[in-house]
Length: 57
Image: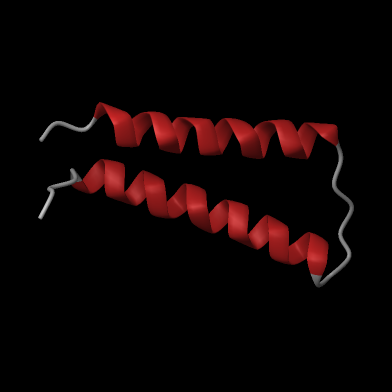
């Protein structure tokens, strides 16, 4: 079993939650999505992936 720091785990769950809620909003509630939303959500996901790579084993 691999160990993940609590701060990194929280950041991962937060990033995934933010992305999931935005996708649900667009698909179910027909919210508008524009370039800036896509860009900033992409930055959240890049940061989440980056944190996952910085963990130590």
